[in-house]
Image: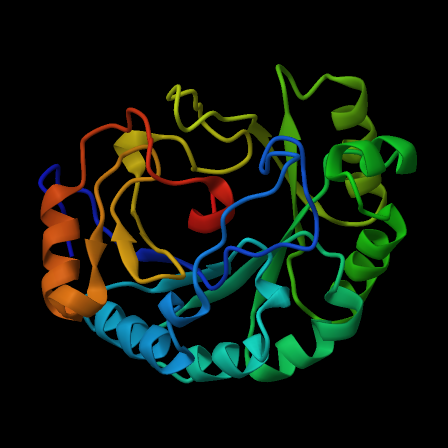
Length: 266
């Protein structure tokens, strides 16, 4: 499956919820957010059915995101459904890690391959300040549980303001080196202003190499994070939405005024 710029689209990111159990300062406003109506959220059957169709067209990599995907009730059932789809080579999840202690082994048994865990600081006071309500120990226990369950490699997503040489980023780097974790540095982005850059240690943010489609939890297929373009998979049908998203994928991201990280999945 190729877009107009001959980029091979083989990666689907699925946001299963716009809800989260943290309130990170760079993701959610302090006053809270307007959540999707429950009846608008895709069912597991819809998500798995759509994934099966897009995999038949060449997608081999699938990542489950949120919000925080582990707050979606029964999400391990969805993981099991998706893991049974043939030709998926990489099935992963991005999580804040706070609930992993309880779910890591269940996720691995369901067929999840690996996890990316958000961690911007290992200072418990700063962690609380950034997340507003989070406990760093929950994440550290989640990382340990993920490793023990075999969700490998465990990758750490560290958001930075300017450089990976920042004090907190350097401390997270040392923590990763000491605990056999892979790290990627993500510059803080702004959807509305169109501020983004390449991920240090990953391929995100490089428009020339972008191979992604994004499915939101309320059924909108987005060909680009930094664009307002989206197609409703329920109104158009799975195949038509995939076709239009592929044909409409922009050469480069600009800005996004109709979505947010908590309901697209970053």
